[in-house]
Length: 272
Figure: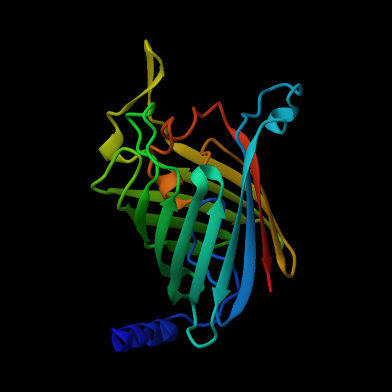
């Protein structure tokens, strides 16, 4: 197995010439970028779970509780375009391990592949019979991007081997768009459609009221310095990992909030 893997990485390195070193993260979606040629980075994510109401009594959601995650990205010079990642968030006490490989890197078109193992250490609870906690599974993603005129379009086809309600796997595609307004300033939008496999699942708000699982979205502003990436965002998706964002039926109250019940958050990335 060692030799086919070495050949695959060598072939990928011929397709992926040098590019700007970036941690492969937009808002919540993985990207086609990478640290490229060695380096180290850490990421810090923060999501306020309280919705940003239209008054200041709760500081637009900042008075509510939140989940903060911390991750490490490591690239090795011997394997160009390969990034190893570990990330942990207290949101269901989730740990992810990932391998992200840039396959094609051209000015107008990029492709990568990402394999992630996710583990939520919270186990099944008797009072959530319609949700399965303590998920352990694998995410396989093939992010693709197209760029031109300061605009980048992103599509992230994803397979999840396990979600809160689906034990036989779910496929989904996340979408993103980035506008590079200036060298250091960007606007990013992301969309997480509801997987078709769970379109008929109803969420019980109370014993007599239900609602459909919602589509997710996020929009954010990114400011870049030489070694930092600061991102301020608004989103109705409470999670940050692939299974939480693209699974659709995440947590004891499955899926994203209603579109009007969005909250604030931020990402901080430091590249060395």
